[in-house]
Image 1 (cartoon, rainbow, N blue to C red):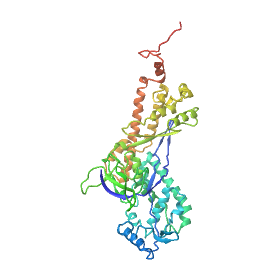
Image 2 (image 1 turned 120 degrees about the vertical axis):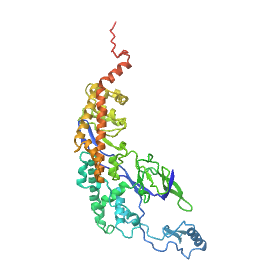
Image 3 (image 1 turned 90 degrees about the vertical axis):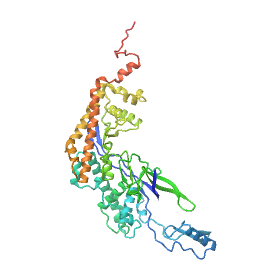
Image 4 (image 1 turned 60 degrees about the horizontal axis):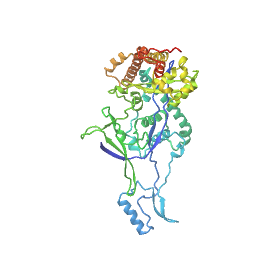
Length: 478
């Protein structure tokens, strides 16, 4: 690892939900991206200076004045750093504030979702000529190719995709948050927001927070750090070990956590520095968060399969109890990636959802501690056939919702496209490949139904009631 630069990192954690949407089928619902947390760097708020921060009160004892000068000479204090200085107080010697220490905007944002608070802070600073963040704000983009910024015509290219429903859900969520904060915070506090803040402004702040963040720092998922957020992604980087927090000197007498970026590979002067944004994110998440897709990595093509235990199921209570005992719920989401194995709990959950008829005895309490193990193996021909048939029908239904075929998308990918159209074509092509991948798995499963060993055969073997050729052995009473 090669350290590139180190920055002080004081951060706070901010979480907001990403709504899910579903396309219903008999057994399955297809959903979108998982909830994504956003974490950003805690803002440094403006203060008003009352006096020169480096001047020491001449009435103080000479030793204190000498001590203060020494702190200045050693760089412990500077014109920008001290909020308090030594002074004579009733107790003798103490520290007094030499400038106003208050958070103007913080006082009105305390009850808001944290990401909304920081969005308002960014917008307020953006329209202040005297903002301490001016030089940083001036280099931020006005928009990205994130799908939240696409026009209706551009979004039409995403017809049939999960990304379209996700994008629309996110846009509705951001708009509802804006209307709420406009009524409760912005309009009643015009002295803090002299420049009008529009919905487009709010989306800008949302996009900045969504796209320019680092993760896995001291247990926090994302933090916003100026300068470090200029670094770009490359699929050639196969590790996420690039962001570190180390302890470093924060003054003459103290140590604090410092943020360090380290290149995962050796670099020559003049070569661009890259990192891996997130190995586990799908291309749909990349398009929503960053405004591009990793087209060179087919493993980012994904489709989210959502399964539900219907409330009308006569065994709903038992099935829900079993699901919850195994870390799932009435609704379960499974991200399926191209050329990867199916999630381990997908097939058992499918069998649980489809369980019924003569197989329902497995739901009895006597099996409660062992049923998940039974569900990890085929239960019965009827149960296995049902899950294969329903999943395949769901895949075919989803594929029919796209306005183009996979062959047409492949032909388009060979031509020069507008960047946003290129993203759309890549997303729908990738989703179709994953759907074909899922259909192929369950098609192969259907062809093997006669060769599978089911619960009853396994049970007879365990009891020694099945011969070597799997013929059932009957004993007649003597």
